[in-house]
Image (cartoon, rainbow, N blue to C red; front, side):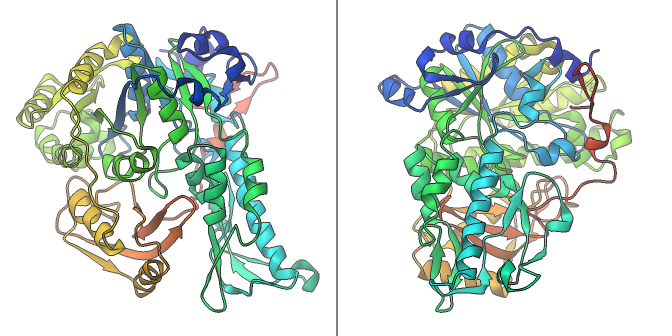
Length: 555
């Protein structure tokens, strides 16, 4: 079989103007980036605001493993399958970060015959949105350090500056740095560091804003430091919001591309779900539900991260009501959660499968707590046996949940028709969507509700500094914000080694950060980092371009 790159390079793409016309986007609402990419003017929202809404479908997954689950591939394949059965469907995804592309994970455009194209462009810079995020973020940092240098009129305490710099690459040596060395002319010396761009509050604000003016207002609220008297210093205080918004005037517009089968796809925004809220932009999602019968979007990593944040944060700010959830799993991944090593996953092991199945059951139980009907998509691998498949089906039946074998990787939309049909039935059940917590609860209560109800924790322990900051945020009027927990994606707990369905564990909240512009409070659990590092053999070592322009090694 061809590689993903080869499949993508042989795709018969249609001009993006034709893709747009098919879903009702007019030529004057398109801003072309070549023949196969375009941005969509936000003016379209005024024209279509009275149109009825289609169904909103969230694709999520079990806790990720090295064995592979295939969430993005399933999302794309499902969109293709829905169109095959006569439904007008649009797919919405996040933009790939260059950190994972050149690191371990690789690209984020699907796989096999369920991909979005042009694959190389999407994985490499795309339309420049993430670079705009990086620049807007670092502009604010530069203005703040210049303010210190020019007299510090706001009386900023240089020991209480919380705004770091960002870049869109994995770079562990920049996690902690010292700025301003070399004498007075080079600014005020202080400790700081770098995060990856997709962890930036600017990225979160972009994805949660409803338009450019809303984004500018969010920028003004960003807390960058505290004064000597303990008062919050914002981007608005530094008069930075306007210039930051100017840098984002194009980035706020959703990007339109297509799948291998010419299904329209919005790719816009890219916050990670382990260290941020993990969903594409509200702008793209709201546009999709107006233009399509079925708007299929995904949330990052497992349902304990991306889906929980999508429900509790994104749906709140976007006034969205999900109609159904697709939970992606594979037998290989379930056996890994049951304790099987990666090199043994091809062997039948019903005992390990039964143990690993507990992870899937927990995620299903969590989805049910939000009142949204679910369908399990079981990604097929050649090593799956009939006994293993039958076991998964029987367990899902016991939980009154439909399950479908997904073959979209090998067959494209054709391999997802059964999944699409079962999803349509699920959306017709009627969603009883509800939030997990109310915003008027104390911040600690919201954190502990997520830890106990979603993760299965027995207790939550707070570092002294985390306790202090939670109290400070509530006293400063930020207690009504939702919470965004940053933790490992590999486990329901904050310990990456605890696979399957651990219970009774303790979640350690070591740090709490305010993202007032984005509109949530971040609680960092365990050893999670906001600047990843490169592995021993980064993907970048195998990526190249040939004299004729052919790209190799990108996946």
